[in-house]
Length: 272
Image 1 (cartoon, one colour):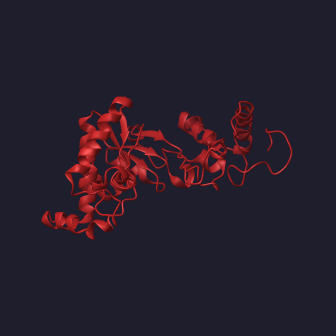
Image 2: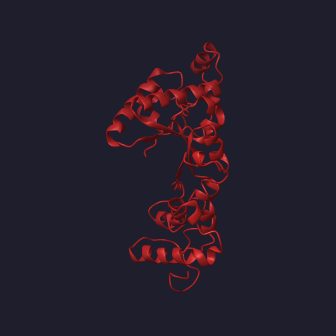
Image 3: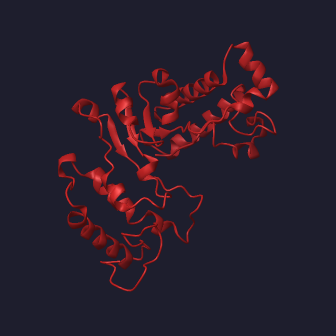
């Protein structure tokens, strides 16, 4: 599943198309008042449709700080003429991007801020991607929308102080008892953001904690180890980490206090 994150996190687009910036002092979010903005999005999505034949496409929509729209004269005028607030404009932008994706036969995925801000207006085909914290997917599926869980407190791998036990015990279906609503949770995704990682440390940041989430996601709820994780799960993760090491994958010790740190002493990879 590919993602272009609009209207925020798109500042770099203006390096090639300066007209996408509201002004030189307001380079993010993209210019909501300009038809050219949506022409560019249409062009990019049309090109990407040829590359990604999958059903879902992620349109982002997170961390949109709209303050500079009000400080940019032509955007402020556009808002005033339509009696819109910046929150209204954020909603307008997201829904217009969704229309473009749907016209290209994609199912839109958006970060949870869109649901939190105007969930009742999202296209009913929308998949909401949780990241800010727990308890979002129950609200999403109660509205009949689908959900993907990536709660940053447990499934953001760049959060180095999250131990494998917390990764393992995070349950996407928590708080959802209705079986029909449970089916609306498509699954989950562990996220590896790259601000503090590169080729020197990315593998040991991902592994082996991602494997703990993988077992959680591919197992039936009833089959998940719920007893003493030290005796039911830990040995499997040690073994898997050893397999990765033997195959040249720089997986870090399972029980690190901070992910991606090297072993604190000698010993087999089964016990580090």
